Every structure is written in structure tokens, then in C-alpha cells.
Image (cartoon, rainbow, N blue to C red):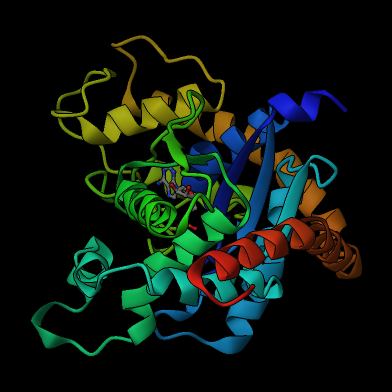
Length: 327
Ligand code: AMP
């Protein structure tokens, strides 16, 4: 098909360290779904990355399947997007080691996550230091051209680009050097209980995070309790009214219309609840259908794996040859 020549290759990852939330949907899943007409995407559940900090094996396994199911429920089309589990494709880890041989210790130690978590000599897993190199392998092994990134991941993408360029100049043209892209449809969603921080998987459920599978009652309560301010105006002013501005951003991203500036915060919250509910209800329903047949989801993942492995194997062979391991 000639169209494949013009389609860009993208990679988006999700870490199974918690349940997917509204931030993941509006910041990553939606842009992924929206790009399915123009990009060949790999959507990866990064289970190996979930093991860089203390983890519960059964929970990682369960969350991996749940996240894959939610991605399908939210519109990821497995015919157009390869949905994969990172650990099922050994080429990721095979390339990881080769890239470690082209990465400086200082480069890895400078990464923010490592610096923050290891601050004050706190004990950390060695994998927390090296996982950005595994992330580079995740990207490079699939000849990824574009990586959708938010502010907090740009450092990792820069490392992947630096390692790819260095490898290419030392050992000969081997890797596609990926570019970071900021999808137009992506929104950055803040925690409803603490609008100064990003909504994250570790935000308390029912506190500041809206889970994609939260029942309507929990969504309603979470929005009702959202932190606002005493200004009393419904205005987009992130500096002075971060809570209200976040609610307005969610409302807009969920297709709702902002109420008048003079509306009460109660009215705003009701609008937000309705708009979020309209987005989540079909995902919840489709998830329930898919979750009733986990065998089907597993077969989608096996299919994704089979689709990407041959090309990933080629990349690893190319790298092995370049670095001196193969004739
Ligand atoms: P994670 O599984 O935490 O690595 O996140 C998966 C994807 O969701 C990444 O592309 C993140 O940038 C995106 N994401 C996570 N939290 C948010 C948020 N609060 N707002 C927007 N995007 C987010």
C-alpha cells in the first residue's frame, strides 16, 4: 500500500503502576486515537518500567491487562495500532544493553526521576538509573520517527536522540533519530484536589484523580470536591485560579461549553460532571464487554507482538552488526 510510505511511526507508552485516569485519556490516549489515520502507532504497556520501583508482581500483571483493555475500550484500533506489552518483545531488552554501551553514567544519573528518587542517598533499584536507556531502546527498536511528549518526558526523549546520534556516528547509520511532537489535541490535566500538581496514577482515587473506570457517583463526588478559590469568577486564569482553570480545561476537552463568568462554581462543577460522564460512559460500557473476555484482549496483545517482532529483530541485528557482534 503506497500510503504506508507516508505514514509516520509513533510510539506511546503507558506504565502499569496504577489505573488509567482522565489525564492519560486527554493527554495521551485521545491523541493516539486521533492519529490512527495518519500514523502507524505502537501503543506499549511498559511493564518493565513498572519494576524500577517497589512493585507487587500480581498487581503489575493485572494492571497490564486492565490498561490494554481500557486502551481498546477508549478507541485504540488494533488493526491500525500495534498494541503491545513491552516484556513480550525481548528485542527491547536486547537493544537496551547495546545502548548502555553507548551511554555515559553521568547522562543517566542526570535524569530528573533518578535524581529525585535517589536524593539524600535513599536506596533505589539500579534499574531506576538505567530505565531511560531502556526507554531509548523501546523507541529506537521500532524505528520510531515521532514520540508524543509532555514537558516531563522531554529529557528522556533527548537522551534517546543523543544515544541514537552517537551510535550512528560511532558505528555507522543504524537508528532513526526520533523527534518529539506535541499533539494538538493533548491537554495537561491537573489533580482536582491539588491543582498545582499533574493528575497522576498515585493521586488518591476519589480525591484528586478521575479514574477512567470510576463509577458515575465517584466522578460526581470527585468533581464536587475539587479545589477552587474565593475569587468567585469562572475564568481561565491558571496563575490566580488554577483549580477553576483546570475545571474549564477539562470541560473544554470533554466537549462541554463554559458557563458564563458569573455562574457559580457549583454550576461549573455540574457542567464538568456531565461532560466527563458523557466521555466516560461509553468507555466504561465497552470496557465491561471487553473485560468479560480477557482471552480476546490477550490475543490482541499476542497479535501486536507478532506484528512488530520481525522489524524489531532487524533493528537489533543491525545494531549488533554495527557494534561488532556480527559479521
Ligand atoms: P504514564 O503511564 O504515567 O507514563 O503516562 C502515560 C501517558 O499519559 C504519558 O504520555 C503522559 O504524558 C500522559 N499523562 C499522564 N498524566 C497526565 C496528565 N495529568 N495530563 C495529561 N497527560 C498525562
